[in-house]
Image 1 (tube, rainbow over the protein chains, first blue to last red):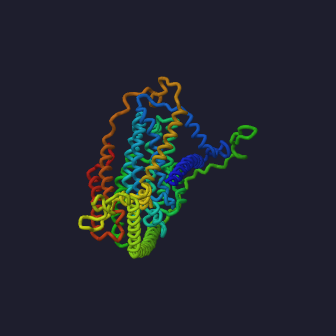
Image 2 (cartoon, rainbow over the protein chains, first blue to last red; image 1 turned 135 degrees about the vertical axis):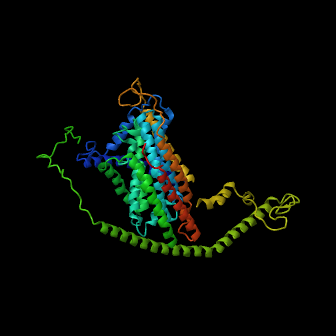
Image 3 (spheres, chains in turn brown, orange, purple; image 1 turned 120 degrees about the vertical axis):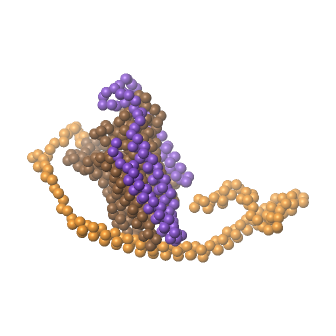
Length: 299
Length: 149
Length: 118
């Protein structure tokens, strides 16, 4: 038990550090996408920039707006961070302490719970932009969750277990990305929509809603929301590398695809996004499962 | 870089920047039939490999299961032996403990048999009864050591 | 199970420590009339923010609940499908269930529940 505690704490601290430097990577990559240099002044080539950002955000004032619900407003970013961190206990190492029989269930449960925190963050801050952003984010996330579950189920049918290490071991004969390539591309779009990232970032479309659901948050609250979002991105990349390929190193290209999509793709249209979730992704993933079932009998 | 001279401004390289690459470049498109054929080929090949490998794994699993079934009676006998040894220890312990009580019959509680049922057959006693002569945390480690693994 | 609880509790502890640090460092000393007012492009906030929203989102949530429940019903199949315990009737039942689900999607589509026009 104490081993598990130590490994959990180390995982969490390393994830917080990894999130910090992932934001640096994003700023640098976006800089070069736009033919400019990213942060390059602080310390040595701007490497301690995320730490300085965190320090700045934590020492800023945390203003609560008028008529906002104080405790939910304060607690929501923390809960978001807690959910994002507790997802990382699923890290699929071959250590015995991290083996969890129903790991995929835990992943689905926690990633569904993040919808509530987004909604609470938008609703409690008593701002119209925040409310609109939160409602949009909620509808988008729950729409894509159905498809995400169905795509995960395709790979779980091949694994016959819920353990993430077993899911990873399914890729040992051949990477399952080659089994049905269109489904993998769909999975990529689904995780982009699920984490509210560009080109599907309607939760914080800055041209319509100034900053979306996190508009009233400043200081430490914004830092929590930011860390939770990037931690979720890294978790989704890890899930992709477990489901589609066997090596965890493949999560790095997937994480870079998130940045690449933000750097190069224009924002989608909201009704088209919803139509894509319900009219194209959902029937397609269901039809894939229907086609898979007789194949499983043939095994 | 924050050197001794202080802040240095980023400047364009010597001779200015190169020309901006603004022309639209349309990538060369592949033949659709070739892409589709390649997709079909890759999918078919990977399914073949996957199913082949899965069958090998299944055979392996079956063999491991058979081995487990074969070994199971030995395990069971060993567990029964350990239980009987524990009962014998309990009996000796009780004899030692109750030798000063007059009229105490071994294995009974004031004439009522503990280890036998009404038809005079052996029956399993509760966990607390079984580990009555050992320390309580021994009982819990013994009882839950199977759950921990 | 207790390992999951331990991990979640550790995350809670870490989150609460960070929250306390953030609240402690981010104490707002001065609060005027303008500073805590909700952001509305520099104007005074107009009306209530807890407004009723479009019914379309509610309908979408209802459809989502239906599909999510059906997916939950589908999940136990993961543990048995492809294994030696499942007989052909099991596959047929699974197939029928999936086809019904697809039929449900098509029915919603025909009915117009998935359209997003106003």
